[in-house]
Image (cartoon, rainbow, N blue to C red; front, side, top):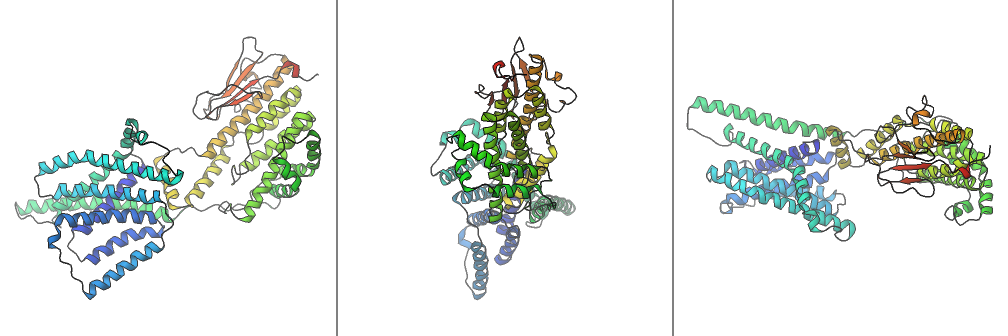
Length: 579
């Protein structure tokens, strides 16, 4: 049982027992209403309106069920001035809560209804099993036989909830009823929910049995008084221990939700590389921005003129890369503000300028300048991608991979080794950067709403290794980086020896210990050559640990469905530069 299931069981058990107490205790109705309100409305300090509605429905169904079971003949309503005033207080409290309700969807109401109704029915069954007037074996038989219909009804309600959610999100059901109620889906649903239902049932039954033997709610004058007194003390101790065990974890979760983590304060250096990035983005004129979207249809002459006009922008970016680069906005700041959107736009312009200039120089320009731009584009993408705005600029390492494949045939062995050397020195697989990004994401999620905060807490307590998009992107980026370095070294080896190495250990073994490892598996990249060692295949297994890439394209690489990468080479002999 993980933390998600345990919290669901404890919260459902606590409010089910609260509803039973409010229904059976012979106290003034307003006193019981006040106790229930204190327990429910304390969630508004978070604020968790959804929890108030869900558990309020749970308590209400239990109270109504007990009232109906006792019989309405004995109920004689009397309306006095005192009762009217107390009802006014009740209406005022309910109205105040409803007035502050956030905007909720149909799916939210369906989810809260199912989560409130199912444990209420379970609690009523447990109450009848312990305090029912029928014979014990009869009650056990009916409860045992009723468990299967209850689970079927609960699963049916979940299906209705999914249908409402799908209809709300997609304006129609994107799945069929057969898919949801198929055999393997039912088995998975039972595996996920039976631990929660079993724990809740055990807690409720244990508390009710202990309450019956405690003498607080029922009296039994038969038997030896000393034995009866000892049994009552044991029952009271068990009852108190169970309630403490239920309330303490819920109190701790409530405390954690009241205190979400805060963002660290970013220390921006006086000379920040991002200042140069923003200034470079401002230099890009409107005509260039229009041509960005039509780059492929632009003539070679227009491209050359644009690249020449971008030299000041590129030089400013290169100057910024020589400085310490720290994102100037605080990590908790909204990305929807005008300043944040303007900042993102300038960075996007910088990235597009470098991508377009790199493509032009690789395909039509000077190989030496093309190599410089490839390294600049790589360094810029690496710096921007590991800020608090991780991934928002849209730097794509596959673009760089394709450019390098086009550039390699034009480079000599020394240039290939220079390329590999520069690629390796830029945070090759920097796990500290990944931890910083994931920590910032967790803090951002924790401050988004209480459900996201609770989700992060429960995953942490359960030890669940949630693979975020950022982590996948980091692994993919690291795999591309290491493959680029290896590819450049293989090309240099080919140019110098006119053959390929038998293994990657022959490529500068002192410097390739980390580069050879696939970040997805921790094992060396898969490397194989043909019999005469004239071609090679270099691949990363991706996040699923299986090499299932498609056939390589004309650019010499291929991407699989699970971030798999496959590179073939080396550059053809006819493309080798003359030495």
